[in-house]
Length: 72
Image (cartoon, rainbow, N blue to C red; front, side):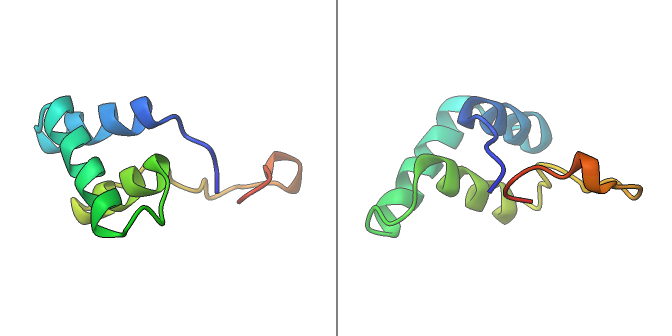
């Protein structure tokens, strides 16, 4: 998985959803607890973003092999 810092994920969710950062952090912690700690904070943040229909990154249409990063 491409490593996007959790603070950047939270900021993007906040901007797109209108939720405060504290509310988002609570949702992330709740998701970790709900999944019995089997996901990381970053993974839980991705799940929360997905629940709100927020795309954290978009693949460019003209992706070249030289631009591919590990985890893509």
